[in-house]
Amino acid sequence: MAKSNSFSCNACGASFNKWSGRCDACGAWNTIVEEAPLSAGPASKTLGGKRGSPIKLTDLATEEAPPPRTNSGISELDRVLGGGLVPSSAILVGGDPGIGKSTLLLQAAARFAQAGLKTIYVSGEEASAQVRMRAQRLGLGDAPVQLAAATNLRDILTTLETEKPQLAVIDSIQTMWADNVESAPGSVSQVRAAAHELTNFAKRRDMSVILVGHVTKDGQIAGPRVVEHMVDTVLYFEGERGHQFRILRAVKNRFGPADEIGVFEMTGSGLAEVLNPSALFLSERGEPSPGSVVFAGVEGTRPLLVEFQALVAPSPHSQPRRSVVGWDGGRLAMILAVLEARCGIPFTGLDVYLNVAGGMKVTEPAADLAVAAALLSAREDAALPKETVIFGEISLSGALRPVSQTENRLKEAQKLGFTAAIAPSGGKPGGDSGMKLTRMGDLTAFVGEIFGAG
Ligand code: TYD
Ligand code: MG
Image (tube, rainbow, N blue to C red; front, side, top):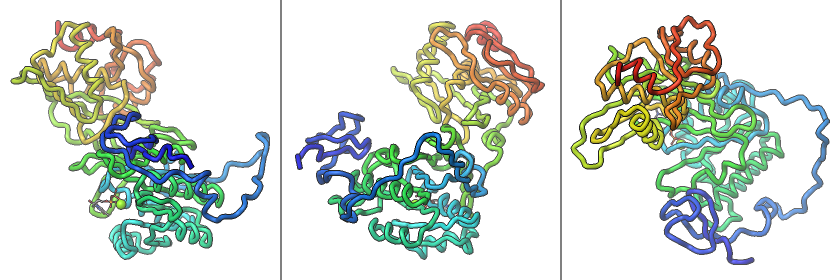
């Protein structure tokens, strides 16, 4: 076996034939580790040591009814999965340690078991007694879930083979250990081998598998990114420390729309569903204040209102600060540049802080106009009307671009008591939501309309 590719990056999984301090593929530092060379062929071939059997071939025209999905009854989870759990699917749930992955999956396992799926929950991190105690605290003590505390992949696969569950939860993939791979648990080769075996097993044995994966910022634990391409669905469980909200976000889904989110709240008795997240994210809004703007957004198939807050203050530094929480810093720089170049409103010498209330992360470019409005409102120290929502994408020329789902955005805003909206010209009609809709073609017109001469 050639000695090539015996180093790999813990952060992105790229392979190298020599060590270096920085990964050429993803730019991360100190993430390259030595690995045992990959054996020829997939690890599964070496596991049983047996000859393979012929695979069954079918043609495209063969009609097979899609297998029924199972709903957990946790609607925020079912929607993110694309409408329930698909049989024989492999799902990866990633997230920072302590964010609530084990809690979510224990609750999900219990609900799927109650819905009739034979379910096994394997914990490589906690003792069965600990998991059982948590289940009791969550009020799920009598759910028909089988528990195990194990890390040896061979033992786990053998058990799954005899027990034949319809769903197995593996918490976490970093603790699993395949004895045919010569490296420590948590290394890229172990994580890759364990994920490969488990997803393969799931496909062959009509079992769905949910893998938990820890992601750390410093890349010390093998990120589940090497696993992402092996599974059908990748969900990220995210949230800000100090906030109760947790967001389950689909970033890849072979069985449903990606970008779908589910919103949960961490309570004393586990994760509770948040069925009306807009109300939750806006709940702390008081009187209109400068710098605060409500953005009518869309996450996946669902409209979601969030509040942008901006603060603009004279800077004591030669290099003014630009600080963003919950939105993209590069996009903020772009909007500041457009405001300066196209509308003649400079932010030189001013510190700019931008925050999305409630710990939500917004990725839609449709938030551009709301961000610009928040920045202007903060800079002019003038509050916008409280009952107005704003959305629209800004192009580098300063033109406003129409965005999708205008009608949905307006309906949600109206439901929450807003009466007016500002949106780009063009695009689809807004429907008959009863909202007063003002449409504008470019940023200069917007500035003139809202803040007089600017
Ligand atoms: P956990 O599910 O163990 O996180 P992960 O598996 O992602 O590492 O959740 C850990 C946190 O959740 C812990 O700090 C305590 C909190 N928590 C609650 O607030 N309420 C609860 O009912 C439970 C079970 C946990
Ligand atoms: Mg855990």
